[in-house]
Amino acid sequence: VIPLPWLLLLSAVVFAIGVVGVLVRRNALVIFMSVELMLNAANLAFVAFARHLNSLDGQIVVFFVMTVAAAEVAVGLAIIVNLFRLRETVFVDEVNLLKG
Amino acid sequence: MIPLLFAAFAAVLVVSSLLVILHRNPVTSALFLVLAFCSLAALYLLLGAEFVGMVQVIVYAGAIMVLFLFVILYLNLGHDVEGGVQIALRRGLGWVLVAEGAMLLARGLALGPETPQSPPPPGGNTRAIGLLLYSRYLFPFEITSLVLLVAMVGAIVITRGRTTPAGPTRAAAPRAAAPPAAPAAGPPDTEPADVPAEEVHA
Image (tube, rainbow over the protein chains, first blue to last red):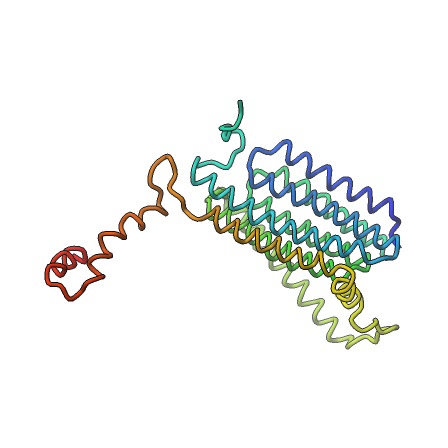
């Protein structure tokens, strides 16, 4: 069997990669992909703990997380499409209307 | 065997995640994200979470990434510049993969169906999750459908072409053209209406 610390370490690494992607990239679509990476890292931790504690509750939570991720992607991509229609760009540096 | 597989899939997961955030081309990023999701699904299978692995492939690699790629291509963001060498390399890689798949298939057919040592329980992980989902987690499960409905309505409302402050967009153009055509189509019997109708069609 796979030891729990390895899985948690892997999950943390993927989550960190997602955080770096959100902070570094300027393309809104790539930022969204990085958010997906973070959600998946959390899912991996849930499944690892479900395995470790020998209960199925963690896998149920993963199911709900996936649903929320699907909803988030649908609405977020709609916003990006609308943003592109309005400003002809998806680079978040150029979208600074709400900046003081 | 299992630690080895875990190491392999973990390495693929980390490398493809890095490439998602490091590659310049959004289309390539999206494809590496698909690879990351698939290796994550393999990790779920190693952990005995078959249902989650299946849903991972179907929902993430299937639905969500198709949505991503559709939007990238719709917005025309994937500027693909590459020479013939890369295309030839890719084609060669494809043929290698085809050959490997054929070899695996041939070996599997030659060996015949292997007898499982212990038959898995009927339904397995999926059955257990279904029973739990429809008993203890019934209310959150119903809320999930509400979340999806709200997301669907929200996405449709947001993407519907509203007139922008910058001027009439492409989505607003057919609506502006509609009113002149409607009276011509409305009363077809009246004689004065025939003349503008002819003009509209001409």
